[in-house]
Image (tube, rainbow, N blue to C red; front, top):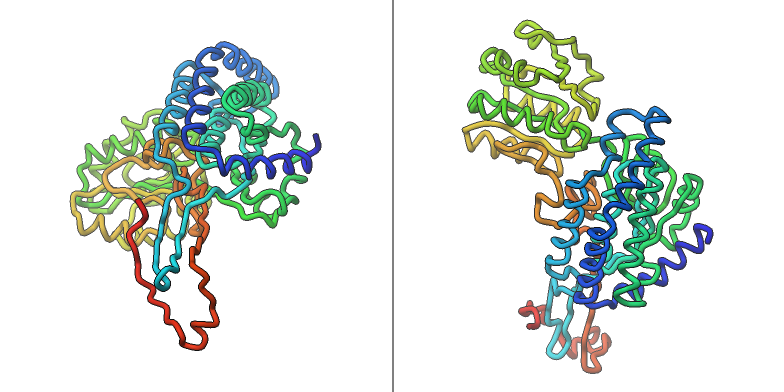
Length: 428
């Protein structure tokens, strides 16, 4: 099938998917989990082939880390499938119920979006996470993974298709996988078939997609995250949080890239930081360089997502300066403050314009699974329609339903009848 045929098939499948019961969707997810458990050796073998080819092609270490699967990651994928199945049904919920007049009732009901196009790089585990969320929300999905993960993606997709076929014939066409890079351009032109595009990958990938489609795009271009160590911070806690936010997994979008330190505690804090971050290349402004051994930082460093063991550091004079720096150079993704002063923390969280703001915890918590969303299709820095880690709710829209008994607008236009607009409790 060509891309148009794939998208048309997904569109047709989306109408059937929207009517599937939650029990059927959960059964499908659990069946996929069973198959993944039974065929994990097959998936790891395919991933091994992808890794071997990637090394031959001299792909960078960051992409290799994202590409690699192991037993622990497979177990995490299986766990996420179970978690998504256990979540409440996001479709068919009544968000609003209002009497417009006696016997005339308005309801606002959550519905699937339709067909989601997802373009992602390197991380084959994202294929299963995204598919599970789309299935749970009654959406069809067209997936395009990076060529570096082709064998792994195909192995995972076969298991998903088998699991869906084992569950119910109406799942046919709900999860489809594209193969070539050339197909992306064709997919981006199908604004009559695809309802939403979600890119997961590099800054360049996201920007390219946003510039080349009329389809709404949900995602983030950069993950330039900050940790601000306030003058009222517990310095031991702040060092532990810095290590976790930078070193626990540096190749992800919620890892910290810039550390801001209040001048009053800069000497004490930074003096004990270098031994904690012994594997990290530190870059600092002039005031940092006066306190510890660092490479000079330039303005470009404040705008850079390293995705590696590199950290830029800046000394600031105030909370206001920290907030201004984050809003100027950050990517509105995730930013955290370390402080014992609640009023300072609240001012930081109110002033920083990011999809997630945190107090005394690592930026690495900005994740759909850790937020209890089951998994995520990505992290959005948009303000419309979804923001932050996007789980089930971000993959739903809504529909207005009006139930009457022969009501006609003419009666209201002539003041024969009058609208009451009385909010009602949701049915049931």
